[in-house]
Amino acid sequence: MTLVPQAEMFAKAKSGGYAVGSFNVTSLEMAYGVIDAAESLNSPVILAVTDGHRLHFQLGPLTAGLRVLAEDATVAVGLHLDHAESIETAAKALRLGFTSIMYDGPSQPWADRLAETRELTRVAHGMGVLVEGSVSAQSRQTAVATSGSWELPTDDIIAEFLSTTNVDILAIGEGSSDLDPARVSAISSATGTVTSLHGGSQLSNEQVAAMVASGLRKCSVYGKIASRALASLRSRAAAEAFTLLDVVDATRSGFAEGVRVEIERLGSSGQNV
Image (spheres, rainbow, N blue to C red):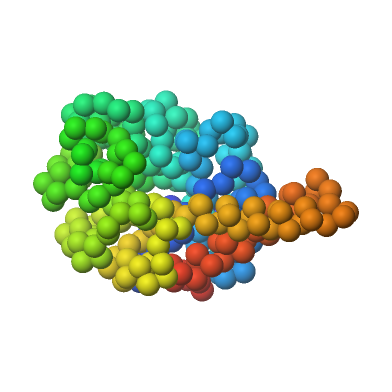
């Protein structure tokens, strides 16, 4: 298998009634864990790199390694740039071969935010790349959602954002938000846009199931998986013969364990076709 067009990935998720997991990584050890889990459960998966973690890696070298892992994988893999904070970073990701890009953008007037996102989408679509956008209840005043402001905005803001920018994926909120599955279903059905959730670590199994049933097709999870990997590392570190290589192994196995749990929750196990 190789990097796959994410439009195809999400079309299959829609017909199969499941969501594809998007998992943030900052190293190849983490990425190996994601692929290990996906292959063990025969699930499509998205490797995500977030702009907010850029102090911990160099985008070019990491992307090169992720592309090799994806091409060697036995399951469908997407490569996603998460929460891009500038057009420059998004443009670099396009050149590096990412299959989707989420653009947050800097804090700027609403009209500028719409114009930048629209132009990025135009360029990305010419390269076969999907674009994810995010809006909050305060979007017309603050183009970037701040902590606690991820509530779904009013229908008119969503309609204006989607019609102006032509993004393919709409980030509907963080896991801590008071999310309404019925409204998510209405947005998905009315717009045909892929709905995406961030902060999936914070949702219970019941909440995840309800969101997927309502039409959620992409879910980003990091915190809970990172905690599992850290616990795995601490357990290994207690051993008398602990070595630096154990750090590598524990990171990979801890990530794999966490990702397997999330794949099962999202219903994508066995869905790689």
